[in-house]
Image (cartoon, rainbow over all chains, first blue to last red; front, side):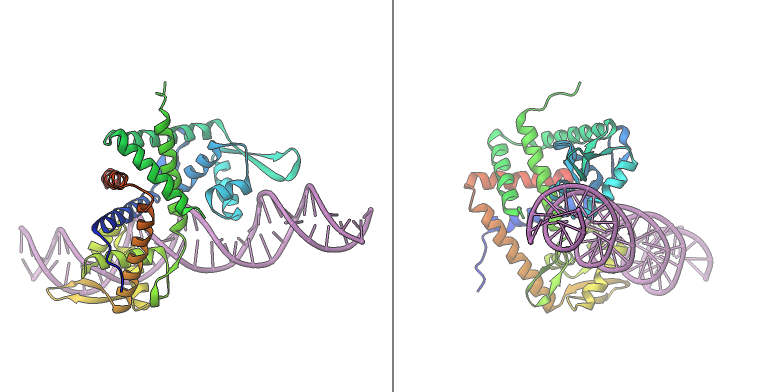
Length: 148
Length: 148
DNA sequence: AAACTTAAGTTTAGGAACTAAACTAAATTC
DNA sequence: GAATTTAGTTTAGTTCCTAAACTTAAGTTT
């Protein structure tokens, strides 16, 4: 009935599953980023999504992060309370809110970015140029496959 | 101050970040697996972790999934209620519980495995043999780096 | 221009998935 | 046989999310 998968499918699929579980575990642990204090994974992801291109509307941020507007309202309230994110009314549409990072938020963003780069460089150092290229190509394909 | 990262680091790191966000989103959506009905990501992961090697102790399952014993108690209660997992007292240690899959749980396990293989084959079909090998090598290194 | 409709964001109640810590009961050690 | 360790449970609380009802502002209709 079911076609028998070859061993590469089985092993790769299992390693991918393991990676997903490890990431899931990591996504529960808060981390400290510079002077910004301890941030939950959701908080730093939100800062990241703003830092990449700001100012940004609440609704666009919701799309970037793949969550509802209500979730954005809640997390932005927290980040504003921690003085990491600033709101501003859109000059041409009083309904809209423009989000940007404060200098403290910017610092957290850059620290996080540096941590990520450092981590990724550690991975790269264990691979050849060809392998890095293949891995990055695979990432792009994977991301396309998972696109909503 | 900060050493300027080259573009490969930046791009690869960003793609990896994107993948993490997509996985995080996926990890919120329940799916249907055969006759077992709709299962949450945590439920199917738990079934997966039992299916790989059973019977298994509660405490070992906690280690496999990287969660506390309390979390295992809760999720196993739910899976037992859905008749997907069966408990048995360890014959040589009355404190211990041996977990295994019911036939319904086994079906969910196999269905999930098939879905994973299918997904992974879709990825593989877009890569050369060398690229697949490099990707899988990268996965193993990544998993090692993330090991607790 | 008053009456609709659409769009942006907020509020609220609730659920999933955890943790930490206190607990029970069984096994082991001293 | 008393003390300790180990396996699992319970409970209260946290985080992070959703769905749905809501408010306010903007654009559309006639």
